[in-house]
Amino acid sequence: MRLGLSKQGMTDIGKALEIGPENAEALRIRAEIHEALGQRKDAIADYRNALGRDPMSRRSRAGFERLTGEPPSLFGNGGPLAPAVEGWVVTRTPGGRYIATNSKFPKVRAPLEMYGAGEPRILEWELKKKPLQGIGLLRYDAGTLEGDDGDGPRSQHVAIVDLWQNRVVAIEPHSWGEENANWAWHGGSLVVTDLDGTTNTLKLRKPRRVAQRKKRVARRNGWVRQRWGRRRGGILFFRRYGN
Image (tube, rainbow, N blue to C red; front, side):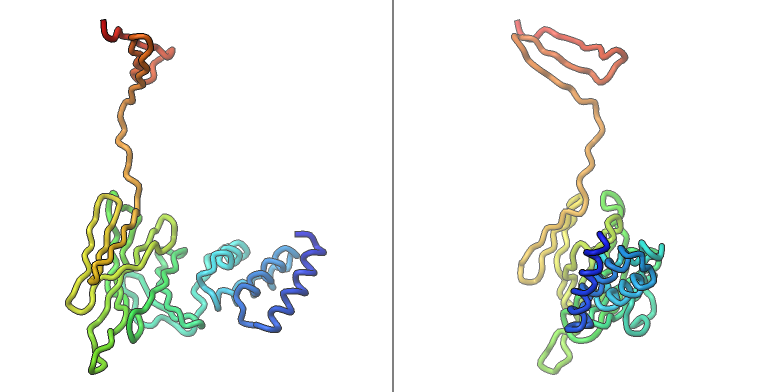
């Protein structure tokens, strides 16, 4: 970024922040300008402020980690909402979002959506095995469903976490009170059917190809040409086909 453009950008973004001082994107852009100008401390401060308003911003997280050498912690109001469950804790951000984090997976930030009244509560963490290695299931209480007496059944959902890509693939229903959603695993895929019969298919892992010797066959003028794997000198074997 050229110096002139950086200074002009700083003027423009300053005006934007005068109008909306809580704008996470504007703070992130100003941080990038500070970084381009070599103003490291100011850049870190703006990245930190941007993350306080939007902790899921990949560019703000990348910028903060680039300058500090550390993954950003969750910048929220206060500490965890409840004791850790298998290392997972939930924090509420200034914007009112709920984020689950685990020190074992410092780059993962799992947003927990609520489907009823209350705050999320971690219930279970399960790591899948092959062929779903690297996939984790974070089951949590997603709130109380409204009833006539104001005390309806509990809703449980599952955040499907891809630890290889450090992201939440999807949040799927687990149960509503005594009623359970149907989860069907097919190799590296999952099909979830909710109580309304709506299905969602997730391809979480690609099927592995079975290692085997491949044959390349080319039929030309009644001849079959076969390559039986790689051999010294690239020897090819030919066999008569037909009469």
